[in-house]
Length: 577
Image 1 (cartoon, one colour):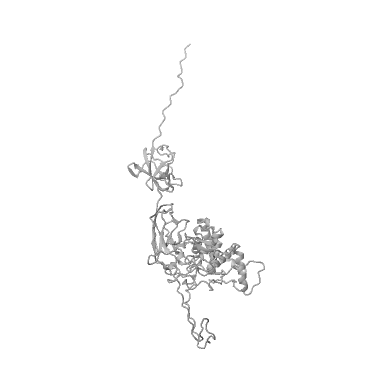
Image 2 (cartoon, helix red, strand yellow):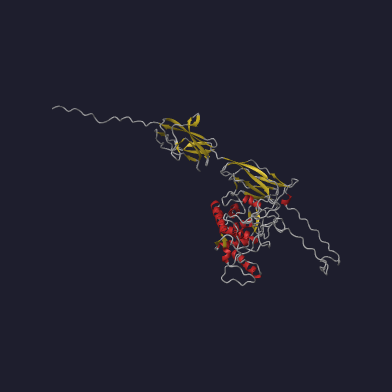
């Protein structure tokens, strides 16, 4: 499949000026910088960051290079240009069919799961355009898999962030350094926790546009950001790649796609050409090893004047020693220590009383401040989250080197799970903390009425059994319960005679499982019926937590009422005349 190269926006003397006008016209304002608060949430500040930080592991892409092409100006009479003219809007507005479908599907999924995020699919399209040119012009198969791998440059610190290998080369094929991967350009360490299965094939693949688009949407919707709010929108985009230029480029494409777009066949999308690193695009093979500059030939003329700072002609200048940079706080961290985390136990649906806390230390045991620590809820066996509904949180250590995770909130799944801690930007062995979620409980059950429960043989009980569950006197909602027609008060085996429930086919059932109290702690059982056996029978209801209630059921033949004495007076004999 060959991608067609449409007219591209190229930067010349005048096109640069036109591009600048486009940014001003399509962006409401220049982006604020991004800082990180003590919960790991990025917020806007007064000082703009126009260049990536030294270590980009705090962003989705590792602050990797991106396409800087801007959308065309849709003006009736564009200003004259020098060099290649700005392309018209029709070709640029086209998005490959499978890629467009993935963006729309991801946005629809996020509208259902995180309605408050207000994620527009056009934002995913804008980021996809800037990151990979819409998966290299839609170079994907029908399932959304990229036909050739899309890899960013090696993040070895030479002009880019310095991020050592975190995945053993599993995603990016590089076991020395990390590289941004796939159509949405996730670095492996971010994909590890942000990856999603967008096409339902049971895999989370950064090279699949459905998976990558859903992961990008989830990444932009974390921390309860509302993307309909301009400040939250800017903050979310900056968290993807922390650069003012990146923000403005994405915003320009967002506005462009909002004004209208259309579907084009896969593989025919327009490819951008200008990159923030000066290259022609993301690569499919490892970057070439830099070569040593050629040695000047003997005939190369020598400078006629001594180098600046050399007072003695003909004397080789003494070069100043290259300063050795001081290690960053992150680079001094040797290990993580538990900072007093208590027992992590909570009932389903409740917040944990304890929070995970760790301390970053040097090899000498000295605390290290201003280090980012990531807390990750591991695995799909739990639906627990941190406050705000996220499964990952990044926190900066305080002056004592301590980072405390946001409060954990238990979901409805019971059992154990792990909270994993790691130092962002390092491959140090982290600490794992086991948390446990117990089932909701009740310690008391009571009927909601006192009506006697009676029935004739072969008939139906007129009233269904309804009970209310409480725990320490308060409503016990969503508590699991079981109802069984037992043999006797001392024998809890199932009685094979007497009252019964019915299953969907109308067959007798004398044990009901998977019952749950409602939000008010109420549980109303299905209708009860009776066979031909008469007598007193017992229904026992139990819940997790040990609450038990035994209810009497009476099956007796209907009594025939005795005749009522007549009050009609006896006739009297008449006298014979």
